[in-house]
Length: 327
Image (tube, rainbow, N blue to C red):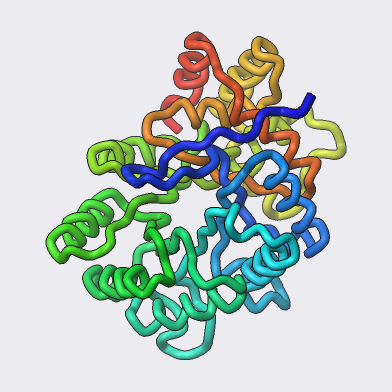
């Protein structure tokens, strides 16, 4: 018997319905080649997923990668499978994409050119959710919002959102949008998980709840730590390399291991994996719409998707919340 399709939730106060797990594509063209990326996308669609998140800058930090590679792969998949109308497509703008003083940022010039470039790479006539990738202190927020509003009015963008935005800046942006009668941020992407809570929960979470802003957490598995594969006792197949070393340095300590202990207990009680439990805990938090999950293979994706269907009991939720307090 096949698993039920991924449930959906409304994105913030909007009427837009998106899958409760979004598919992140940062690894496409970086740690996953095009064939593997297509397989991951196919598996997500087959599971009933509809929410795909990318960015123009993916993965410009990798040697030989000019940026825009993930968008191109997603665009070729959309065209090859003929499924544009089944997908809520999200991408981002802000990072450096060309040389010169206007090659990055949230100026009107950069946003309008970058949007057209993303549309060409994706092979679509509109972007469902266009997100500013981070705050740009050099550009007035009014300039950014009016440029985004022009894209909405032109039909190139349906909704706008933001990533890596401090609470005070979100509230200012919402106030400016309301006063000017322009499109407003309907979603935010914070770095939020069992091992990174305080940054979001202290101020941004109450602001999102008060103003009906959807929450799309990225890195919901703590860079892989919450899968349990970074334990001190992990076998020789545990991740290695500079990124793995950073994760171990950050999380493999008494506090991190206490979270893993709570995950182990909940996983045993619910017949689930640690990763599935970590996602289920996030989905039980107020205002969370859709954590963003990524995978290098279809098998990896299928292993974590059941977290969307997992209902943790009150005792497990309380144990996980207590173990992760202070993160």
